[in-house]
Image (cartoon, rainbow, N blue to C red):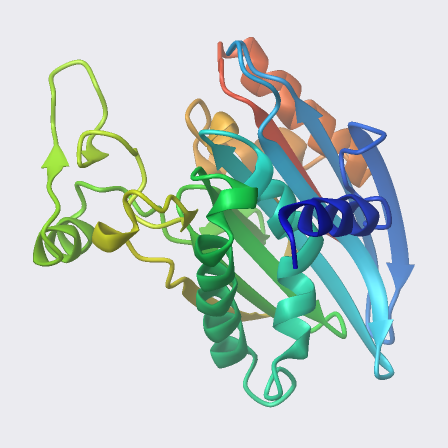
Length: 289
């Protein structure tokens, strides 16, 4: 497949994804499953940087093999938006193609992340040498929630009003991440006034793409499985443009009285801007009614 074919395929798929930012920056949807009434909405805000918007997302409810699936994801691109765009169009397809998705969802997610990253690296001529963080959440029949992530986009669940982080921030200076980077021959810079960076360049220790740094980095996700029952109220997925200025609990508290999921997502992005966040901000809110 040529580079033009890949880009054309990405555009065609993105146009069909509920929650893509191809034609809108805000939307909402709802669905009634066998066990729960679920609504979802999202909002995106362009940051103060001089480059184009690099955040992409998926917010979608669909039926697959008589199962109700909620597919939610935030992709925060860096050094260009092409990798994040590719992930928006293809990552969930790759996950659902895994033969053991229904029997071992956690394992299927891990394998799909790694194989997708391999494809991105192999096609860096057309997709570029940039990269993207990712946090994905798959809700199965309104009861099982499986969250996977690389990088610092984050998923937070509210249970009885208490925030529970379901993803892992892969910061280069964390002991486990720093040890992994150094074991592969890389280093973590720690310059005063700047955040820690892999080889003095990237501020996350795991990501898709980033071909020039990948020999010192990983694309293996952390995966967490959570049961959704009566004490679950909402799920927030957002890029680090939100989490740089808000704690998990502050985000949950900010929307606990907002019933409409799309309005909740919009309120969170507006609050982050009010708190002087300068980064691109993308946010998804899923409400369990």
